[in-house]
Length: 180
Image (cartoon, rainbow, N blue to C red; front, side, top):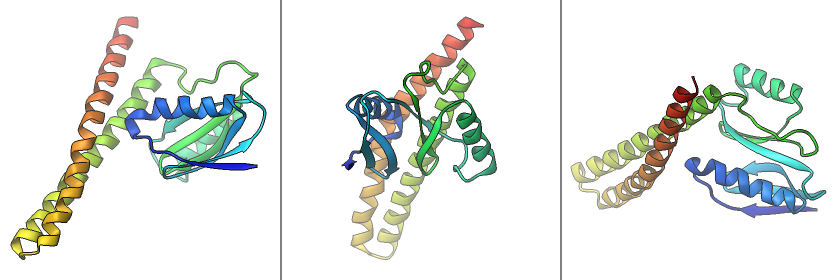
């Protein structure tokens, strides 16, 4: 039986999303598909799978990403689904603990990709807001001035995520330097 749950996680809360998916798996609900704020689960054995979430450098259909997904499958992980560049893998829980990052450099690189995504989204939202504001003022279109508020508010909402993610990135880089 399938169960669909609608839930929103921000990019900087990917670890919370991963924990939530694994809690669902511990209850016997195995992730089979994802969409924007949509998770599809099927009933299975409790704790059968461990799940990991990763932001790829490119879309999953890109040759480099396809090679990476094949590599993960050769390592015993199963590609479950993706939303844009976010991919979802699972592995049987009976195996050793499922970790995507075998070294500190790959963890740092993953956080760097997330930081770049967040900064890009922030800049895009500010641009969209300013553009609508300028158009609204220049052409006397009150609706554009009102619409400009939406992306500007979204940009403000992204700032705490950028701060959190950059702090985590810097902490991990310092930890890597200490270990070297």
